Length: 399
Image (cartoon, rainbow, N blue to C red):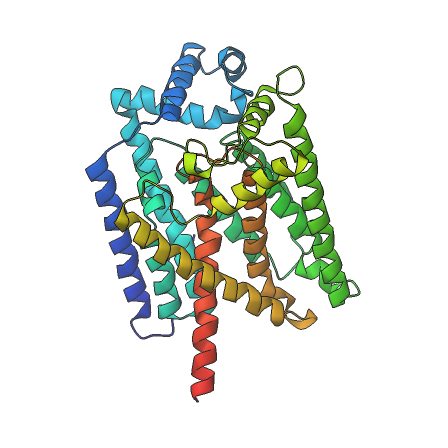
């Protein structure tokens, strides 16, 4: 990770450092004020860690004894970390998780700030990214929870940052091996890494070096989008059919069966009653539930949010959506064979946004919508790039 900050302003680098330190104070103060917040998942992880310790860190034995809707081995690295913290800190193990969350949050924020600074060298664009993170109440709140979401999001941020920089030459075999190994390890930290696998696969077949070395045309690019759209549609259709029929474990795994039962109850966001749909009666109703899940996955607020929380979220999401959307549209309009490499970072972040959104719209969306936290880096980074494009266009027109 780089610590030097490229910026065209005379004191821009120092100002960005000050901004980052202020965000660090904000997040650190909040964690100190709140202390560790334990959820039902935290209690599950704690019990699993005790079970792992009892089995002398034998993951196979632990996995066979832990009762869950799918194999607990997919949480084994996270549970190992909890077990180590319990041995080192005793009853204060939750404070260790919060310290890890704080470090992870700052790593994620720094990666985004540095990326935009390196790409634009513009203080104001970096300030937009900093503003988005500083006003992300959902991200701030989650940092105090004894959960793996924030540390996982930091790993995702580092992976996407690495992939977005692999644009000049073909990625060497060692790079591919490292990427695959990293994804396998992440799969056993949190079992929601399939979207990253999809990002890596699509990135491989659309890499600038590969496209530049083959006959290129906009029709081929359109063909790639069409194939991805058809695959997504087929995924939604087959998923809806599965949800209609997989209501008991003998038909499918316990997780699929539980998810199917939630679909049959019209659940969109778990325990958010205002989002529930009528009991599905036909095939289209099951597809509609997934579509509503996709929409609510990026909702700015829910019933029960306070006025301040709602206002800040509206400002945060409206700003980031508009600016990120402008960055994507601007990149698509200017896409040519000559600037494949300039388009690459935007493409990687767009793939991540799509892959995670589609994946979670077909899964359970938790009460606090915490599964979108790994997407803050691509969303806010694109927002910073979008602001830079708007500012550059305004400055060029004013000359």
